[in-house]
Structures are given as C-alpha cells and as structure tokens.
Image (cartoon, rainbow, N blue to C red; front, side):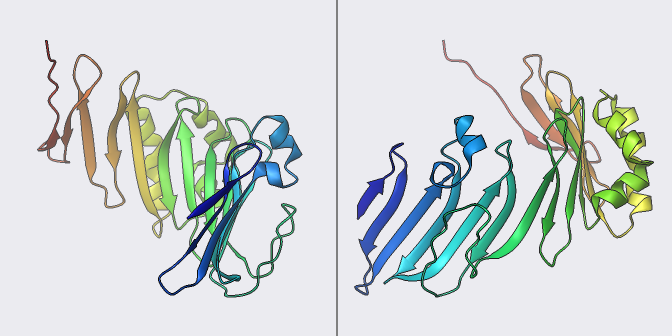
Length: 238
C-alpha cells in the first residue's frame, strides 16, 4: 500500500492492488479542502467531508458529510454507483451520483441534536433537559413538531430543556408521549447529579435502574423487577 497526506498530515489517499490485479484507491477530503471558511477560521480543519473508493478509476462506494457553522453534521450522502468520479470542490455541489440519506437538526441554544431525518424513512427526535446536558428521550416515528405539540408546545419544551428536574418531574412530563403518540417508539432516560444515568425506560415500558457506590462508580444494573442483571466489582492493588 502507498499513502499520501495533505499539508496538515491527514491521510488523503490510500492506494493498493487487490488480488484481482485491480487498482484500489481510497480518497478522503476534509473541511480544509473545501469552502468551509468559517470552520477553518475556528481551526476545524480535520472534519472529513468525503471518502470515496474507486477500483480501476470507477467509483465503488462513497460518503459525503456536510457541516453547519458550528461544526455539527447537517447532512450525509452516500453512493454505490459505479461511475467515473466527479470532482467535489464546494460544499453545495454534491456530485450527481450521490443521494442524501440523513438530515440532522439541532436546537439553537445548546447545539444539541434535535432530530435525525432519514430519507424515505421515519424520523428520530431527541429531547434534552438538565440545562441541556443530557438527552432524556428518544422518540422514533414522530416529527419534532408532533412531539412539541404532545408536550404542550415549544415554550413548554424549551422551559423543560433549561430545567433541572427530579426523577418524578421528568417522569410526569414525559409520560404523555406514549399516550399522545401511540405509533411512536419512546425511550426515556433519567440521571442522578454527579453520578450518571439513574434509570431508562424502553419502548415497551420496561425500566432498568442503575445503582452507584460511594465513589460514583456503577455498581448494579437492575431490571424492572429489581433483579440484578449486571454487577461491577472494583479492586485496588496495593
């Protein structure tokens, strides 16, 4: 194999000959290679924007990632088209043989992921709380607008995101999702300050709990009946 690197010492080309005698090339481009001037000014020069593999000069597979001005992934594309490669030089000029497969949306304040929209598939929505620190719900097969409406509107969801709820407050707030959105798959999560996740409830309504020791280390994972599913032990060597 042979390798080539860009001026920032990032790998940009890997080339080898396979067992069939075919020349295989894998090329990677980064934000520094395209017109991502805002990200480059923030020294975000190493985010991969394209990876494309060719065999004897024909594209075998590839992926493209687009980013917003915060360096967050905004769209992704892929291809399995066997065609001649087209130069990808600007972020907005996606080669014609690529198809978009995901769109990512974020909340404007905390920049947390808010929804993932799959082309021709069901969306996934994420709710956050604890002052935007932790995700508290993953809702599949529902739009963000539908989730907001089920919880009382955008203002209510925004206030909840900025709050630091108790477990009971969190449970009461999210409980309406399963009844108001019967076609959705809802997973919810609660956290204990300074420790980590305290419980999670899956789409079937079954809750697992997490216990910690005095050193804030995970000790037990229990099922909905309190049975220990996993136990951790910690030992120190003198």
